[in-house]
Image (cartoon, rainbow over all chains, first blue to last red; front, side, top):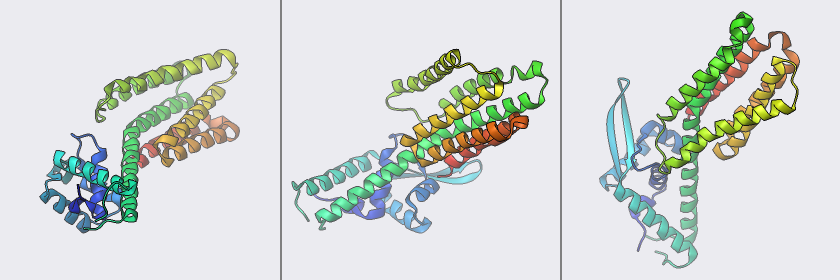
Length: 100
Length: 184
């Protein structure tokens, strides 16, 4: 088992950790995620697009109170990949994994 | 791709920090509507005590508690369902524990004025918030500390206009606190 190169990037790892904390049916607004991670619009948007292309998050755009709203949710595949990657990191620290 | 042990440890630290922030934000968001509801009840009831005729003012808090309880139950249904739904009953049980505490307290400690009873409520709830804040986050601790401080200031310094003071300042503090918790 190796590292997940998509998830391991620092901001993407934080995005997945944040979304993975939510119940499976819950979505998080982009603006709230941005505030929690203290990220910029462009940076966060680019990394979410990478995760979306990998099938790790689902992005939903709609209107709430006549204002555009973007919500993000970790997919089942994303949750599995995240748990696998965290498991890999833990094994590496415990000395059971292979660096590299 | 090469990941050293140090990099792995740093990454896991980032994961835990991100999880912690999310858990704290959810706790704040869940608590927010209840603080706003009870701040509004507090404001309404205390202003009624200050300005309404005594025959009506006596019903202000019982009516406020009834409305606040119904509104809180309604608000609880808007929260995301927990996977362990059975634990939600503990929140309702907590109200019973708190009510029982106050009944027992006033059976033992004689109070001679509404100001004293009211101040005890403000102080106890302020410290309860501080206690909850140990799990929920520093903003709830700050809110509880503010409630205790404002109650003590009202008790010692604003006796003549206590209802007006507590309604506007303490009720207002809860409402503003509830709005503040949403700002994350």
